[in-house]
Length: 185
Image (cartoon, rainbow, N blue to C red; front, side):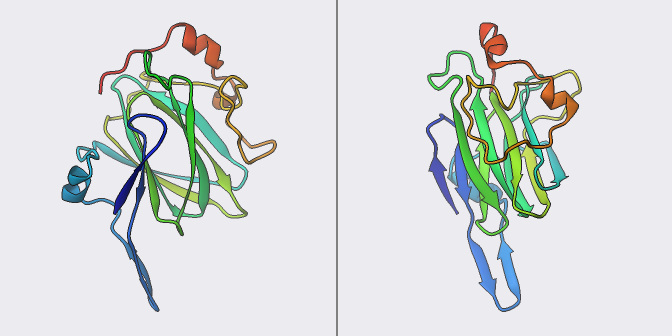
């Protein structure tokens, strides 16, 4: 297991070890002691699993009450996973990180609280995405920013993605940036 820092403080790519033979493969996706030794969180409150069809884009979402970090991985298919720094005062405020996560590459993406998250499905099949989160989901404690806001400059690898009505109505980056949230980790 290895950790790769990104350009956004706290956002990390976790490269997992795959043990493969003629029968298939085995991947250790979480290990408390190894995560702690690598400076990754170990106190997760909830596990989530979503399935998305080809051409689906979800995001950009965050939860501020309670603040929630996410450990994102893919157990089937492949996604283009994106995190946007929405932390007031951060030197990378408004910048993003994007990485491909798939069942083949054995990567996870750690997004601390204050990083908005979104992804799109790549390829012709569905994607099953898992999330370990550090805060319990609470309706009313969530927010988001439009995935296609030109001020964010995210180069999504899909044309005309399928998005939810909710995601299509999320506020623009400039609206958020005028009065950003302050995040406690």
